[in-house]
Image 1 (cartoon, one colour):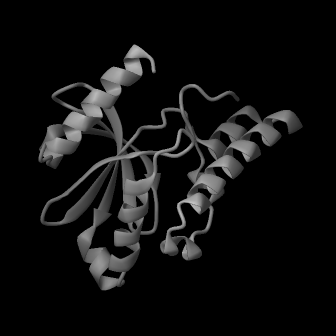
Image 2 (cartoon, rainbow, N blue to C red; image 1 turned 45 degrees about the vertical axis):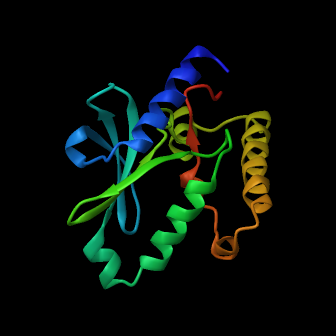
Length: 165
């Protein structure tokens, strides 16, 4: 493991043990939006480390009876430890929102990258499909009962800074 990974892992362990709140972060650009959540680029003020923070509206979740889905998502994310999948670093809440602190994928969405470059070669498509299949095989190996409702969204494929285009 590289020194950068060691320090990043140490920071993640520290962040997991600390009681976090929104004011601990500088929230930046909106990087994604879903049915009941928005994802922001955020920087932990204490360390300067960047994360993706998924902000879920409690009122919307209650009104639309999504509690079960949110709890399942948190459960599954907390179990994941795979290089092809985003890691859940921490969770916290305030009176109006739930917050999932996630590993940041600075390359953005795969679909947006493909659109940006105007397509990609068959070899690149094969590479990313293989990466997605490896991730799905890992998820399947966890044998979590909540995966029976799992459906893959192409727009949920994200680029880390080390992936090729």
